[in-house]
Length: 442
Image 1 (tube, one colour):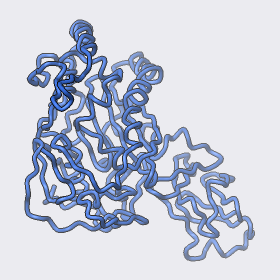
Image 2 (cartoon, rainbow, N blue to C red; image 1 turned 90 degrees about the vertical axis):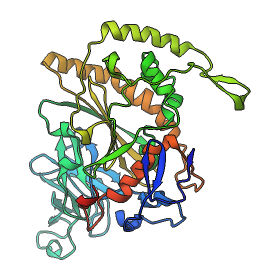
Image 3 (cartoon, one colour; image 1 turned 45 degrees about the horizontal axis):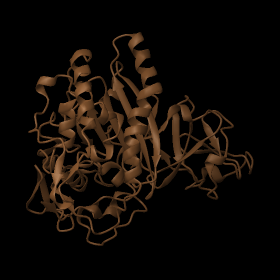
Image 4 (cartoon, rainbow, N blue to C red; image 1 turned 90 degrees about the horizontal axis):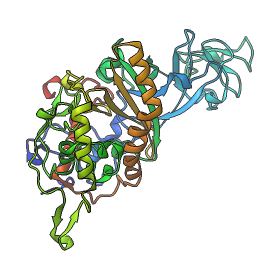
């Protein structure tokens, strides 16, 4: 079964099937999602409602707090906008447009000559963290420019949590940050470690490789897959073309109706999803009966890993109880997975139409200082490489070669989850002038 995504955006997704339904009011075109964005108008269905530069009315991860020094600003592009980050009067990270309103010089090229300010390197116009000019060093203390209308630099609200700076990119008043950021960032007992990468890919394909049929094929030689027991390997390999039904939670998250379906990491072997187990190597008639995988090496390795897991791995329960933040994707761009020992999150912040920032969160709840130290060492010495370089690096290699603009896209039924995410964005995402989604549709 295939889904022709160019036919109509008015579909609901459940177990790999699409169903027609009455059309809701047409959402604004993609250009309404933020300045500088354009609608291609090429009849690509839901893709036309996925803004190339991202959804502006949200909080996004922007930069690690430690990367912002005290004596100068740091320039970073987010959602197609040039931003400069620097230290405010109390030491917190503040954000302004990078372009000085006087003559459009780059503020990031200047220095923080006075506490809580940043000074333009061209004429010495000096701004505080709200973007208000406090002095014009080039004109002297009698300058009237700083009182002139339009002399302010646009400021962006920021908040630093667990050492990571989040920024509100919207034109409206900021929505509660708790609606957009995982709850562990507000939990004092949670240890949240994070890292970032820069992908040469638009945010849309960078996020949409979720819960489809790529998992085993792309990642078959990753440490993550090679360390699976037989049950987990079978789930990854033999999920087939269908997927469970999905649902939208609070108008902000897309999850499976059975949140534990994709439970290949469950430490409790007795409750794992039990799929029918065909031959490990399936035959393909179109290839003259050739088999894939080509060998049973991974199957034999899974027997060893299963033995080790049964005898060495302690049974644990799930860490995430809030359905909105369980396995799935949360607006604007955060994917979540509960490993029981920790919670894995991957958030995508659009850089521009061709690149994205990828932020990874590793959340655990160490029961003692010694365990906290162990988690930190494990993250630095092993996990960051294993999960973000080895595993997600394989996603990066594929996604960077995807063209999101080509019109010939045809979905298969195994692509139900990314298609449902497009529906979530089209029908529930905040838009300028209407940041709050209609509760009736949530």
